[in-house]
Length: 421
Image 1 (cartoon, one colour):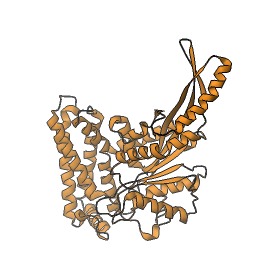
Image 2 (image 1 turned 180 degrees about the horizontal axis):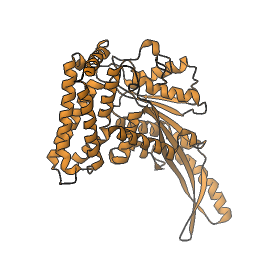
Image 3 (image 1 turned 45 degrees about the vertical axis):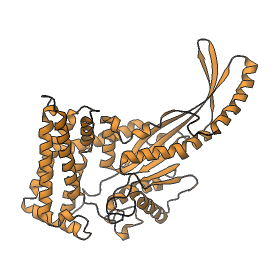
Image 4 (image 1 turned 90 degrees about the vertical axis):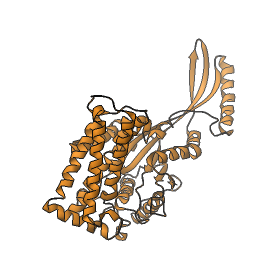
C-alpha cells in the first residue's frame, strides 16, 4: 500500500508539471528563478544526497544551453553539529562542479544568491520572496514594456499603462522532498511551503519601494498621454499598473539509496522514505491542533499503511537475513561516526520499535476521526501530534543513510557506480 501511496504522490507531481509546464514552455520574456533546497551537511561536508540535488541542476544547465536563469538561490542554514551553512557549502560545490564540467555561467546574466540562515523550507521561501521584492522585481518591471489599456465605465473613459512580469520558479531537490512539498500545497494550502511564491502575485503598488522611480515614470507617461488626450478629447491618464505573476515546476533527482547492492543501505533508505512520507500528515495534524484545518481521512489511511510497511521492515531484522542487515548498518555508519544510535545493532531495533509504538499510539488516538465514528477532543489531537513527531524523529535519527561525498567524487556529474545523479 505504501508503494501505491508513493506512486500516487509522484504521479501528482508529474501531473502538475505536465499541466503547468516547465521552464521550456514559458515565453521569452519570463524571468526564471532556480531554488535548490539544501540537505544538512555531515561534519561540514556536502553529502551524497545533497550532491545529487546540485548535480541535477548542473546536468540541466549542461544539457539545455537555452536554460539560463536570472537568479539561482541556494537555501539551508547551519545544521546541528556544523559550522558551515548548507547553502554556502552547496554553492561552493556547485561552482566547483560547473568549473570541472565546463558549464558556462554568465555572472551578468545569472545572479547567485545564498541564504545561510533559513531553518526550514517555509522560511527559505519567505526569505527568497523578500529578496526578490528588494532587489529584483523592481528592476524587472522597469525592463518590461508598458502597454496602454483603455478602460470604460459608465461612459467615463481613462487610460492606464500596464507593466507585467512573469516569474517561473524551477524547484530542485530529491523526488520525495518535492512530492511532499506538492502534497502539502494541495492538501494544506494555508501551511504550504510554497505560499510565499503565491503571495508575490498581483498588483504592485508604486510606493512599495518608497522611492521616486515609479513616480518619475508615471509623470513621463502622463505627459505623453495628456498630449494624446488633448488631441482626442476623450481619455484621461490614471497612472501605471504594475503586476507580477508566478508559476513553478519541479525538477527532481532520484533518491540515491534504493537501488544499490548494499542491502543495509537499501533497508535504511526504505525506512527513511517511510518517515518522510509522513510529512503531509504532520502538517495536517498541526493544523488540526491549531484549529485551522480539518483532519483529512486520506491521511489516516496513509498513516495505517506506513505503519504496516514499517512493521514488515522491522520484522525482517529478526530473520537470518536481518543479522547481515544489522551488521551492514553498523559498518555503513562506523567509518564516519555520524550516527551514535547505530553503533550497536540492538539500538537499531530499539529505536525502530519505539517508532512503531508511537505510530500505533497516534493511530489509536485519531482512529475515531479517521473512521468517521466520532470527534476527537483537542487534548487528544495534541497527544497524537506528539506521538507522530516522536516517531518521525526516531526514524530519521537512525535511518538516514546519507554520508559525506568522497573527495574523489567532487567535480563529477555521476556517482562512482555509474548512476546519473
